[in-house]
Image (cartoon, rainbow, N blue to C red):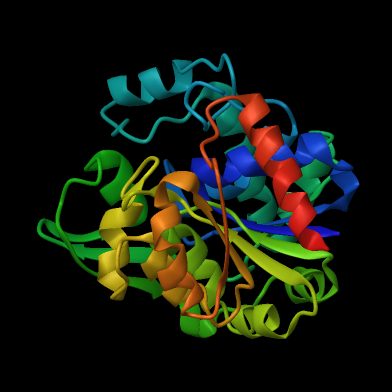
Length: 307
C-alpha cells in the first residue's frame, strides 16, 4: 500500500503518475480539507474533488481542477441574479457539491461521503479527507482576515500575509483509516504541495505527525519548488508565515522530524550538503511534471525509494 499526502494541483499531478504506474487499489490518498468552503450554500471540498476527478479521468487537464469540458450555465445565471461568481463552479461540478451537501446534512461524515462519491465515479483507489471535522485555513492579510479561497482565488494571492492559522484544529481528529494507512504503508509520499496550506493542515491534525515519525515505512517528500520559487501558487511566500525559509533547505528543516528522503530538483543540487546536515537524505532529479510522461517517470523513480 502506498500512502500519498496531498493538496492542490501539484500534488494531483504526482497522484496521477502513481495511478498510472501502480495498481489503483494499492493507493491511499489523504487530502487536505482546510481549503473547504461553503459556496452558494454548497459544501465544496476542492482538494478532495481534484483528486477524485483526477482518479476518475474527469479532471480538466488545462486548469488542473474542475471537470473537463464542463459548462457554466448555473454560475452565469447566479451572477445574473446578483450573486458573486469569482469561485468558478461548473455545472457537472455543482452536482458533486449538491450530493456532498445533502449527504452531510443527513448526518454522514465527510469520509463516508467521499467514499460514496468515489464509488459513484468508479474510483478504485481510496481517497480519505484528513479529518471529518471542519478545519479552515485563515490568513491575516494587508486587506483583512481571509479564508484561503478568498486569498488564493478572489484576491489572486496578492495581499501580504502576516499570519496563518488552522481554525478548528483543536477539535479535529484524523478521519477513519488515516493513521492505520500511514502505519501499514509500504511507503508514504508527501506530494509537492504547498507546505503551509496543503500539507501543513494534514500534519497539524492530532496524531498524524506522530504516526509519520513512528511508521516503519520510508517517508519521502517531494519538493514543490525549484530555486526558492514554487512551480505555481504562493507556497514560497506562505512558508515565511510559518517561520520557514522559502527553499528546499527550509523545507527539509520543517519536515526533518519525520521525512527520510527529500526529493529535490537537479537545479537545487548544490543545496544537498546543507540538507544532509539536517539528517535528511537527498535525492536530486527532475521534479517538473509538465506532461503525463513526466508524472509517470517521477512516480516510477519514487517507487524505487520504497526499498
